[in-house]
Image 1 (cartoon, helix red, strand yellow):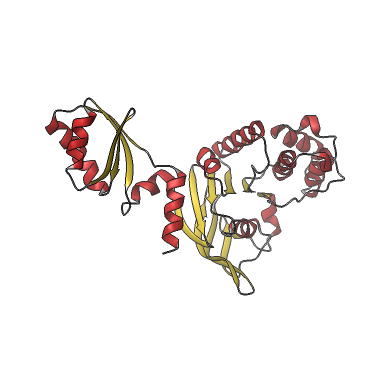
Image 2 (image 1 turned 90 degrees about the vertical axis):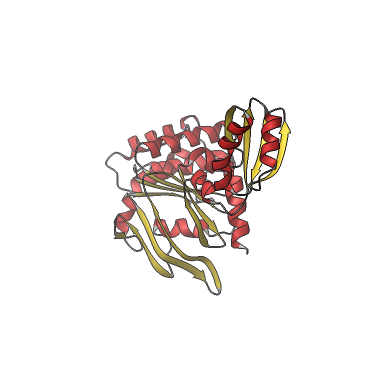
Length: 305
């Protein structure tokens, strides 16, 4: 299933939370990345049908999402806020969600959902006794209980210990690999980098970038790239690189050379030729800044210009 946003904006009085966003989210795991206050939660709530766009349209496989109750059969939402009733047990909370969806066997569906998030052992405890991480997992179980094809997760890993985070990350990856459409928001780069195949980046309510973060990084040719190079003679290769304008800072260390490529295209063309002329064998060339931190920092700085 595909969620499509077309020129979607949402404002509250004079405050613009989301500004003219157009994007498509399809099967697999997509990370919605942005700093706190970027508009991620607002965007997810419009995708889930709980918030109307001020302008623009939000559709699921061509069907209008807002005020379309049939959509809820296909969508599961895990909000960031604590949308749980503390006086219920985990079992009662997930079972009530199954019954609201009028499933043919709500008890079986609730048991299966709790097992998926590894909460069977605590299902008979009241939610108010749960840790933050346990409450997050029981919210995920309630969102999965009707087996939705679309799963929207707002900061799902908040408050989890390392074991819980790894378990839920594995679950999200498995669901995406099975063909479900999963969009999860985070302001933590490491979470998105480990789980998502694609990213959508929001900065100050605007859609700043879309796609594979490594590909986005490669397209950012107007800023230096950092490469690690290992060769048969790092010192000789460093001398050759320094002499060319395509290279900025070149440093020599135990792990080889670190080269800042000011002119990315010329550097990638020139490196093998310089090595050949210098009689140096190049063993390895690897990017040192193709991570979300570099992409995110670049996009943030670019939006403020």
